[in-house]
Image (cartoon, rainbow, N blue to C red):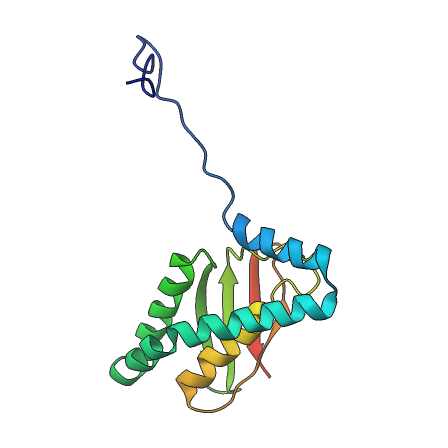
Amino acid sequence: MKFFKGSEREGSSPERIKPLRRGLLVRSFVNTIREAGDEEDLRFFLESSARNLFSSVRELLEEVREENSVECFVSVLDLILSREGLGSLSVEIDKESRKLRVFLSGSPFLGALGGDKDCFFYEVFLSEVFSLLLGKGIRLREVSCAVGGDEGVCVFESV
């Protein structure tokens, strides 16, 4: 047992190994595309990736939408994002103003683009997802970014 050799010395505490930052793979891809291509390439990659992810989870989300509440739909969506290392979300629906707000934390894209268009992927993906949920075309835009914000949360709002 070479790995644990010497780890049970008297009076010593277990060593804590810290995990790497989340989203390193996503940041690596985004940085590679940004360095090798131009703004148009990056935008194409982010939009295509968002649409591909939506296509991958669409059938599941349709099933959840048909058989469950909006809360369940949002919980499943949050689980998908968390499992894929794409953050965590909550949703606020203002029935009076008919506005939808999505609060996203833990995005692996934050800072990868230098604060510019860091959340374009989510604008596309969340617009597709909530269009499916509501049964009509809806567009979400980032109105507050975690990069420049104090709370570490990106806020998207229907427009």
